[in-house]
Length: 430
Image (cartoon, rainbow, N blue to C red):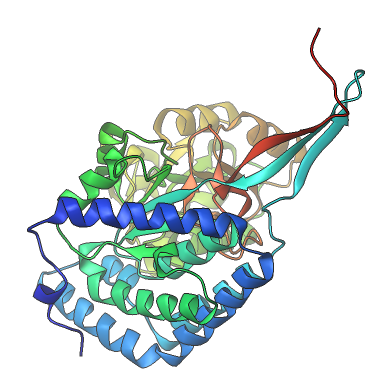
């Protein structure tokens, strides 16, 4: 059984608690920045072992969170995001081990060159410092974020969703055990010990200069709050209003497989397709079977006037539907007048997250991938590949949709900055 929430959920003194949390994390970050790769890898190995050993406790805590969510009437897609299983716990542990086996980015030389005056200049990767991660409902983010930040030599302060409070705490206890076994400070991975929303505001203010960057991972309201209130840099992870465009030269069997996977594999992930665009040149052969396949799979379809003609089960799409991240078994479908119209629709309504084209026309694919301004663009592949693990990053701390510093899946390398090392032989500037 989890401890009573009141035992770990104190509101009085939250400001002092958070400031002390930040100070300890900052001190831990200085130690981690100098920790050898071997010690960090030992910690990651120990964390993976502890997650597996504590699987029953993690599942028990998760069951309590799920019971609360169901009692409160949470949607099935939300329950799926919140739920842990033995398989998902194993995937968490395996993800930590994949991160462990990545090359250590800290200290790697990105570039080096010599100047005419004999100075040798190196650009070298260094940790960012203390990273604040604010996320909702997905307890597995706890392990992903901890592993990635640790590998990159950063301390991390985690503030999970209120709905996953018990699950997150149970996973964090496994992480703390792994850190202790490797001789690294517990504050290297800190967990905010309260559900009080005031803690989020304090993190966004920087905890007295302790926090170097904030990573929000959640819905529009969370990201909007972070962007409005943050006084430290933010890796923006905006909503995933993702599109699949079925071009006129698309193979129907391939298009059907991709559309069904992109929408229905897991409807609650940020890479789930929310809009299907079908080219008018293939609508006569492709639109009806694609719409029928979605409907038969249990997906509600909201369509434009042409889409509603092909199946009476289609309901009218509103203007708002084109820009909505449903995170559920719902998709908006529209017939477009060509590649340019599809690109223009994505530019107007999309969130610059992940968009795909299905086509056998390489020139069309090249134009789509050049002109669609999203963090991830795909040709003949499902949008559900928008995932750091699928990129070979082991895991991700989020998918950044901005343009500064990091874009797309934020993995180990993206959690570093750089500094310049300059070696001379006594040079002075004239």
